[in-house]
Length: 207
Length: 246
Image (cartoon, rainbow over all chains, first blue to last red; front, side):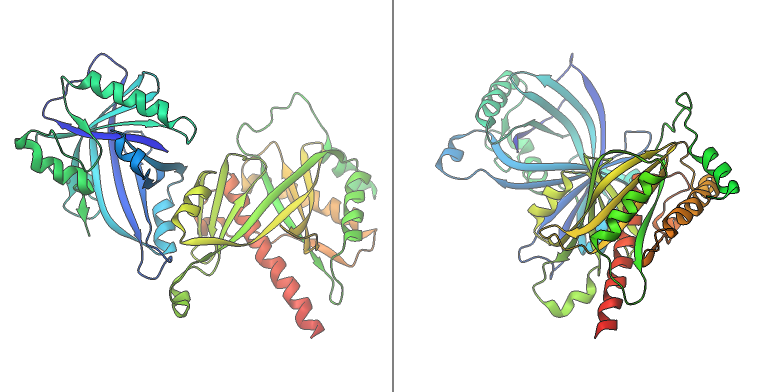
């Protein structure tokens, strides 16, 4: 599980904490038409910032539902990650998965310990003009970056993590407005269109 | 044993506690028991094999277990099954408790991942576990060699389907450099086991690791590929016996 809020800022505003550069090629795969009784999606993340690219398989599942969930200002959803060797894209293609879209996230990741292990990613979302051509990626929304705040949680402790993330959002409130993914309330009008583009499907290259 | 074999054997199993063991993955060969025509595998053979290891001074160390799972695609139209991999296998190995391996034998793909990949596959619901086989038994230390002898049983049954043996040579990770010593060890082993007049023999058919993009330097991915191939050979062997009966 993880707790998630997203927002956008027009300038980078976080400093003074541990940070690392981010350059991740995100490949989103969907099951082919005949595979599975329900369609499924999986993301392959290739970390290009390392000297040797490393791969992670990520499954983002359904969000917490119900009246209680609507009261929470943070999105709580299932999330499972697994490191994998470099053959992972070949494997999923061979299993019958197809490329849905891909994007390149470039930016900075900050790590905080504030009641929970909080990761803040400030990144530009870039689309590739040619298949897998990460060197030729262009920003989906030039000059505007996506801010994502995530924290891992379990079914036992997610309430505490929600509280920690909410508190952290209040801490960042002077800098930016953060909300559940897909909710752009409070985003300034000049960035509203960018928010809708970035927070709906990540704005990636669709095939 | 003959005098010549005694000399080779002493060299092979001479244990020098100060010799630096390979800091990377030691290599191994996986063998499977091939029954003679007209005979089948049984627990008596397994006992004889274990006793043979102990008779050549193998020191029993403990239990081991590997699991191999066949996954099948969940298809809305079964008529299109030919579009999907014939064999999609998942393997867990005792020496890598936090890892899981996938092998597509006909596509020649092997993947190493964290164990959490199994949870991802469950959530995707596109492939489901069909049959699981356990490879389990005892492991033995024999100088610079580690032997594992194990039975092959379906996960929810005690029906013995086969016998496997792993021979691991600890000091070296290079497949090429280890060929001679592995073959010499196996000659010694064959000499010892043949005296028990068992109705079958151990066979090793080395997969072409380069087909899977694997190099000379041995890794757990090589082991996963070996188990995949051994399993297909075991199944072919069982089917051949059943065909012979019919």
